[in-house]
Amino acid sequence: MNVIRRGLSSAVVQAFLVLIGLVWLTPLAGLFLSSMRSAEETATGGWWTVFTSPGQLSFDNYSALLENSGITQSFWNTVLISVPTTVLVVVIAALAGYAFAWLDFPGRDAVFLLVVALLVVPVQIGLLPVAKLFGELGLFGTIPGVVLFHVAYGLPFAVFLLRNYFAEIPKEMLEAARMDGGSEWRIFIQLVLPVGRPAIASLAIFQFLWVWNDMLVALLFANSSSQPLTVELQSQIRQFGSNVDVLAPGAFLSLIVPLVVFFAFQRHFVQGVMAGSVK
Image (tube, rainbow, N blue to C red; front, side, top):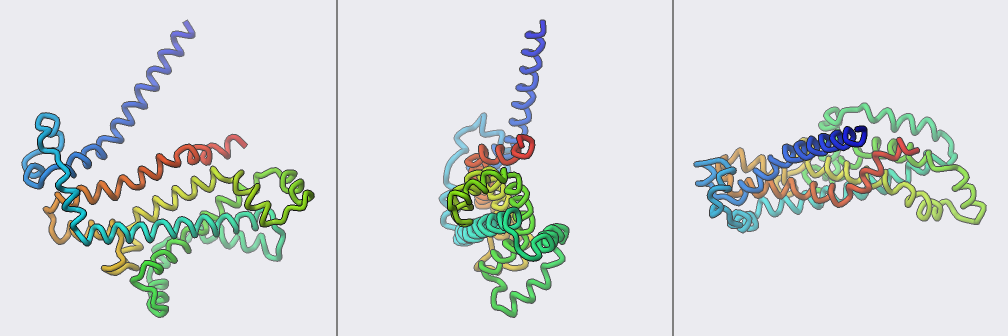
């Protein structure tokens, strides 16, 4: 009886999870199907009509998307903003996290408390002062300016996360490596980074998704030649409104890239989320 009860309970849980997955994927499927329909077909019926009239589907919209210079340029701008930002945040935060966790230097605790205090500073507070500073430095409206802003506001959480993760590494492991003649740099590269890979992967995913989907910072700090895909799509919606044959595939492109990144690193992401409970 207990075996039957456990089997039924497991079946109910699995059915519920499948249902939640289908509900979560429905908007994505609707957007993808809409991106393969013409503007006339979209205006006359919903995307679900493709199941009765599959002839509506074609890749003509994606061909038109590749010919839209604004969309393609903004896509590459998004890549040029998101990838360097993620790399810089992860590298700097890993180095700083190791220093705060295992290196003794004057003012270490005070500096770390300052980093933690920066977590409560809203992004909106720094928009105008930093915009004025970037204007004086010639960075306003450029991709490096957007990258620097994201790096600056992404580092406090990143340092806090990796420092706490690195601090859980057994002290005996580091002492044994030092006794074997390992330098701090070698210990960091060959010991700390492999052990901290789950946390680093989780941080990279969060940082990439945040920057890729950002529109607030880009609206202020990017101009027409450096604006990312989110701003370009919003601009085309405002200007044309009905060009769904370009906007739908553009929106799907903007959505599918973060999904691919997430699913590619989901194993490391789950390890990072569960690391605290395992330890």
